[in-house]
Length: 262
Image (cartoon, rainbow, N blue to C red; front, side, top):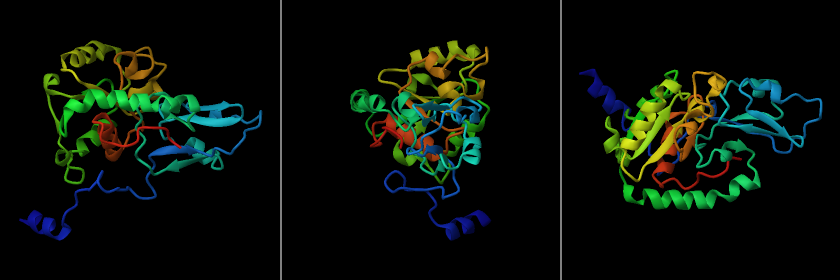
């Protein structure tokens, strides 16, 4: 029985996150950061660097919408003085506007109200929740990351988080995929079968904005938010298991931030 010997030699490999911060290392790319001091000239075409239109230049200041970013790295390769990768996986936010970095004063002003309203709704969850996952046109990458949450490294059941096949037993709805129109009715039906209180988490860039499929006639404009009210947005293409777990903790009212990226 070599697996017993391997287990004894490896010891405990389960992460202690969120009680203790964990990391994927310096080579991990969770999101893109923007050099806030940079001022673009009029002839600088930064917006043309992004295949999904995630980059905006406002009054010479570049900003990037993490809800549209697919982490292709083109902006980092061609303009490293402005853009760089971040290893911080805690990128989930309580508002779609808060995914635009650097954040504006208007987007951060509503954060306190969002956190208070969500906390009031999820207070009845206690310390345990059931998740229902539904795929609305994913490429499969987010599914692999969600599935990893149940392995010995992440072991989300230690946090009182379980998966359920029935929406009637679910507290949180995890949605992946670009929001295929053919899945809209099924998504709505799943949502309506869930008991109150309930929370919707959009997992991945596709679910948030449609990603590279945003202009397709086969998907709902604006991602799944065009079908359901979304409470937590987890950017990434795909987001890491830790990133998804952070989004779930936000949905449970456990995580402390959920505010603006820097």
